[in-house]
Length: 291
Image (cartoon, rainbow, N blue to C red):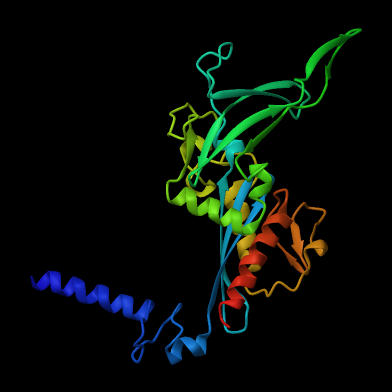
């Protein structure tokens, strides 16, 4: 009993010091409290930003700022969109069930690629239906060469009131709702009635989880810093800044490192500006939280 009481007292003390509550007379270190003098003097701010990044992912940035509005810390994550997690492996590609659609695309090397996606998705209680439009591209022999004719087919998920899910999620408020629905377990592959359907996911990363921090996305050796290394490089470079550099002024140097004003980051990934603007949205929210 004595040990249990001691553990309870320690937990209560930790909550008092960190969360502060409404009575903060003995508070010495505080990050979130808005009522005690210590916290008002420190004036920390915290904000979260949501934005589609790198084309097919919902980025989430969490930023803490100090009393001078300088960045104290930055954390990144990216949540997969249907582009990744709705991609499936059919049992028989020649005899697809009504719950799977086929999309033919032209791959980056110019070859044709057959992709298969779940036809129905449920997102926060809304049933989306996938539709493939456009004629499938095909190969044609011209002399001694084989050329691809046509363009990639387009897959669109739509629902009542939402013509295109990928466009809908570009609005930050919708991106936030999407992430919150994932965290609540309200996003899944479905059948035509909206009930959960168990199909075999095909994406090598998304099959393991919903976001990049918990899946093996870009972790292969010999392929640069990887996703985690690049996110750390961006976050480290932003600490101490107040986002005075405009996004259009950011560029890569001759060594392929991104530069923010006179700061040379260690990041080399593409779409760096996406992540800068994402962090900036979180930064603005953090500064506003202090008002």
